[in-house]
Length: 150
Image (tube, rainbow, N blue to C red; front, side, top):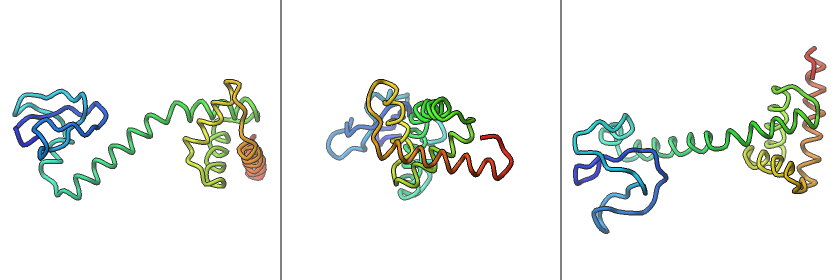
């Protein structure tokens, strides 16, 4: 809720637009105001009742969750690329993505993005090809040791 008594929905990206002028609270671009007193969800109620530090932490958590949801389709596509290229099951493909990300100190979503771009005639960087191949070999060995197909 803003200082003017207006609620905003939470389904749009953030911007620096300030409806009440220079000293007003920031609001999200494209967020539609609801009438004062209207129900706007738990996030708005929590923001009103918690300390500024807690509200900040909650906003960061929401942003991270939205980013995770946005990244999920490309990660699933990358798992498919690994499954097709290295003939492994979905769980092994996931372990390969995680292992590659950790060993190259690269965000998993970036590894996934590069892998899926390679399916569109863009070359796969050599460092990534080597890292994925090594991760796949490690995952396959581990699966065999544990008596799982792989």
